[in-house]
Length: 387
Image (cartoon, rainbow, N blue to C red; front, side, top):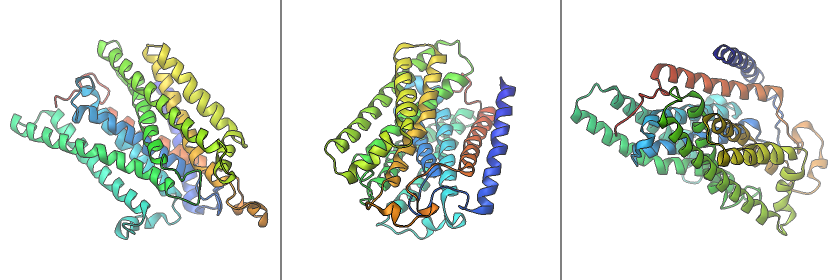
């Protein structure tokens, strides 16, 4: 099984590297987004991975802030998961930038306080530094190399950082939602509910990713701790997925109930357009109905792991359904026919190069996590922190 995994990962990494080489050589020429549909797969992956990071980090706070004993053994695992997915998110949006090598100017020349994107980048930077220091403290405490007095100081610092991290994680991922929500020219995004929708989605997808990792990669699967922990994680995933579905229903039902064409066009594209199956089959059936049924009925680790995998895998469809339908809807009736050009089309499907770069980012994240788990033994039962 391991050999097959290595082979599949190697193939994905090589194919993905071809896409990355094409991105560096040809810029955006091989991408299928344009002047009308300005964002595509990579932006969807960016908000997808950001949500995974925020959700995993909030789980780590159960250890380092609230000191819940059951989660002590998986605190560092949650931190590393949050760190790896954050790097994947930043890599995704970096490939989408027109001037990749000038990305630092968002930090050095921000348009504060007026730019939501500038606020978001500053929050990312603070969150990234906090994650680094919190991870360092967690591993140092676990090493047992310090005396008791030093250890208590480190534990206090770790708890302070983790406490600061909770509102920070909420703020930065809510900021991603606000980045969409403040766009008044796009009625599908312009909603006060958008930041909340992003946050709940982060908890659902992030907790599902963590449950998936724990279910399949925790070494001592015969222990009582493994089964009790899985039951707890399954409840968290189940509740968060259902709450996310409730918010989705609220957003859709209110927008479609006698809504103006400007407000409903994006949602109608999502529900009944060319890619209707992304919502009804990929997201609703495989991402909600089947996982909810499994999590509510099944109690064994394998079933919970596969249910969590379905949530994580299909949640990219949720993010695509936020980004793309809001852009493919005409802002002015007849605009699509005013001038015909591939870059001015109100349609979008990712090109091969976009898919390959996306595969590279996923392979990159899996490789980082594998190395972290191999050298730091994140999934061993002895990995506990007495905070």
